[in-house]
Image (cartoon, rainbow, N blue to C red):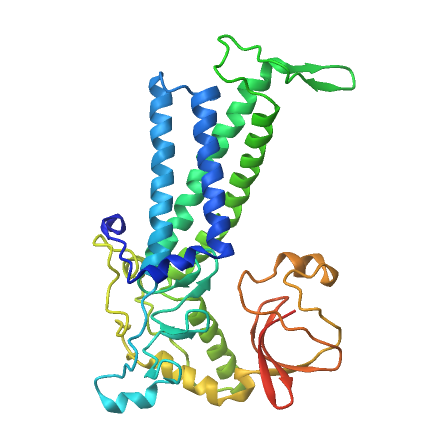
Length: 383
């Protein structure tokens, strides 16, 4: 894939500060533990390097690690691409279709949105990802998605190594009784004897790495499926929400119109090529986009302006009926609420019974919006 031919460029050393965040620390920690343990288990106990299969297996493990880290750092440091400060369309009359960002002192280009974490307007913004401590958008969408694909594949390979290592090392150590199963970890009984015995510490480390590998495979694999769905529709997560609100607005007012998403090329393959190219550089310049027949460059931004003017669609007022502490993953609100907690860095708003909130968007168990407090708002996530 052409993405591997691109070169990571650091605008300045300040970009390295992105590593000093809980997201990259955890992500890189998981990669390091799974990769290191898989290589150690392979070389010492499962598939030695002096065999042809062992050598190929070891090379594959290194290959997974390199590709995963390359796409991870590419997504983190190349970044999504930002709308130039002070940007405005070439035709001055087009400004009537665009929103103005006071922070960036520029008009928001089509498909761009302002990120409070990055403090810039991001080209084709999908979301701000805490795991790369950066936004996912126009320039790094392909690298981010490849990372989501390669990480589960590498973890599946590593999990296979962990399972086979424990099986081959413990097979002759298991003794079955009528009501018990015993494992003798005192000494290896294999022939030939390994250079380093597979002791209790090695067993515990392998079991821990197996849990990380399986958890990563499930969690990151689900994220990959979600990303591929929106890529094949040539949408972002934000644009999917805008489309949903557009249909809600039309239905509520019973308007004689049909909202057509302008950037869907009508073919999954053509949509796919908007993100993945052999050159590694996504199509377009991040400011202007090809649109389907019957739409024009500002069809989506015009819909956003309509929604902004429509207070009913823009926000819904709710009265708080139960106290909420503002915890990231509240245990006292039900198991489903706990496990569906949004994986974002947006602040959780502490709420008390009787207060009012304005919800601008929401999931099944969570709402995003503002807390009404003395004619002002506090932005964040609501349970």
